[in-house]
Length: 241
Image 1 (tube, rainbow, N blue to C red):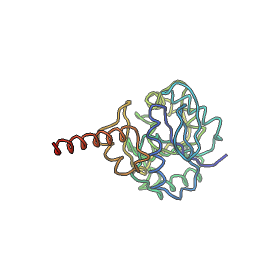
Image 2 (tube, helix red, strand yellow; image 1 turned 60 degrees about the horizontal axis):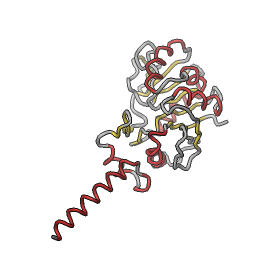
Image 3 (spheres, one colour; image 1 turned 90 degrees about the vertical axis):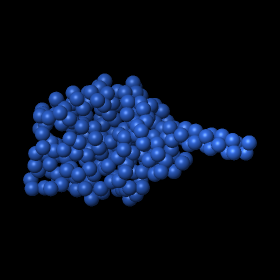
Image 4 (tube, helix red, strand yellow; image 1 turned 180 degrees about the vertical axis):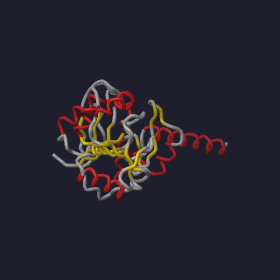
């Protein structure tokens, strides 16, 4: 099994956005030395990386991830977990690599959040790049992009919990975990949220069309393009009359 894995997570409802995520990831980290694998429910994904299909209710994040982590990872495997509808605007590769190095070299660090949302409240040694997550606060467990020991994530997640439950309820379980949770102080993987509660967020269609090749566009981008073409054709016909 691999020591480190990049694991974007998807559900069937958001499957159309995954090719765009993969494209942007390779654009921002073309020589990434770690294996990329996707985890989803049942809808086939049009990507080049391996996909693990773990069937169940589409919103059941907890069960799907616990099954994946127990089947394909050792407890000490470092997994970079993120959502596949978080379309990447950039990756601070040196900062991600430094976070990986910290987890590799220190057995007491079990998680490093790569987007400080919320930011860390406590210091970490004298570092200006990292802080320590206060485990007594809200969102002590966050599903923002982050590095996890597979065993830690498996133990904190629960069967039947959706992503929002995982963050809310999981944050109350974090304080029982012995290992430290860190967070970067700067966003190591800035992204745009393409989806929110089954809806495409305003502004994301234009951004995606400007940064992703047409053949990899999600459905809403294709629909918007067709609508514009129809509107343009109507204008041309009116001018001819």
